[in-house]
Length: 147
Image (cartoon, rainbow, N blue to C red; front, side, top):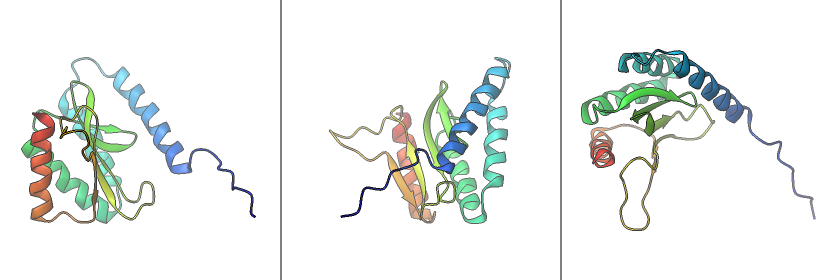
C-alpha cells in the first residue's frame, strides 16, 4: 500500500490570490472616503482586461449584466477576481477558469446574497459560455440576491 501523498499547503495560485487580496486591502485603506464607485470599476476593468480571451469576454459580458440588473452593487476586485459589493460586502464574484486552472469559470455568490431557498440552495455556478439563456438566469439571480 502506497503512503498518502503529503500536500504542500496552498497552491501557487491560491498564494497569489491571497497576496492580491492583501494589496486590495492596502489600496482600499489608502483611498479617501470620498473614493467613488468609478475607482472600483477601474480596478475591476483592469483585472478583466488582463484575463485570457475566453474568460475576458465572459467577464466583460458579466460586468454588463451586473450593471444592468444590480446597479446598486459596487464593482471591485476580491482576491484578484472581479467582484461586486453592497455596503463594502462582496455579494457576487467571477472566477476565471485560468486563475485556478479549472475546466470552467464560475459565478459565485456570498452569504450576503439573498438566494436562500428552503434549507439548501446553490451559491456557485459553473460557466462554460454565456448565451442569452444563461444571461437571463444570471439577471434573475442578481435580482433575487439583491431583494
